[in-house]
Amino acid sequence: MAAAVSATSDIIGSFQIVISNATINDAQAIKLHGLLVDKGYTVFQQQTGRFAKDSPDWKREWYPNAQAATLIVCLLSLKYITSEACATEFRVAEAKKKLMVVCLDPADIGSFKSAVDAIDTKAIPSASGPAMFVSAGGQLTASDGGLEVVAAEVAKVMQNRGITPKNATASTPGDGGGGSVAMAFLEPLNLSTYAPAFDEQGVDSLDMLEGMSIDEYMTHFEMTRFHANKLKREVDKQTSAQAPPSPAPPASAVAAAAPTPAAPPPPAPAAGATADDRALMEWARQ
Image (cartoon, rainbow, N blue to C red; front, side, top):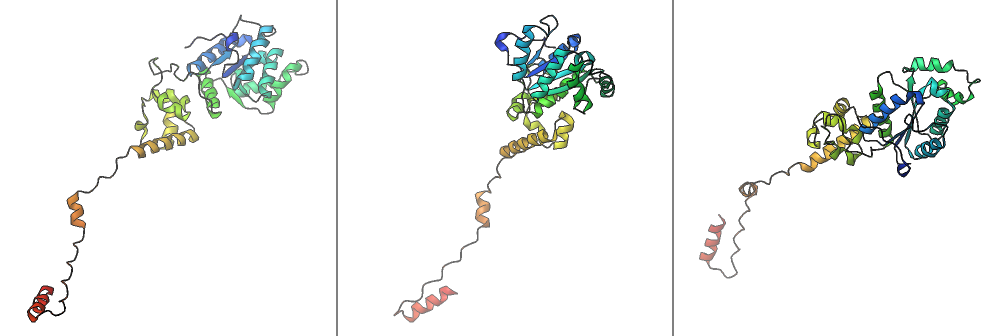
């Protein structure tokens, strides 16, 4: 797995995804960071020991990165919700409409909602924002299936927003570490998110997809119907362009099929023609 990349002043604002998490959950956040980097995304995550959330560095780095990012993934736990700094990050993500909420602890949605409902927001006013989001039925992503599943869900959200991983040739499982082969034909269609699935199936060109249906694309490569339809149109377009033209019929066949022109009638006898001339003309007409 790719190592977590530290943010420095020269790359602030260059990240596609920002992870927001409580310090106690840094281990899970760093693992998710690595999974997303392996998918080609640029990701910012505050690592343990770099800086505390109440330090100037936190404000100087986290907020500018959050402003520039497409998505802010908030890993919610009870520690997160009751942290004033984490609640501030949550409000920023929500206000900028970049919020994706993951139930980290408890990991399943039912238990998480019950735990949040038990929080006394009067005693902890900063928790009211995240707690209200959860209680009001905001969209939640469970993590009880593993962080690999969470990473796949994050990739789907990015894909639905039309965002392609910046590092499109990042090593993916199944490609031997040498880059994605499928990326060559998927990236021009903005479908590079699906490259690992195509590489795993050994698909190295659009020609190999000829004859497959939209439903088969969705089943084999876990594509949305919209993207499967987009790929299908491209495959059909390429197939049509490569189809050889119908061969021209041989000249002999054309000649055989052409009607034989009728012989022109012999000329009428000229004025003053003799009886013999008229007899020859009559014979020629027969």
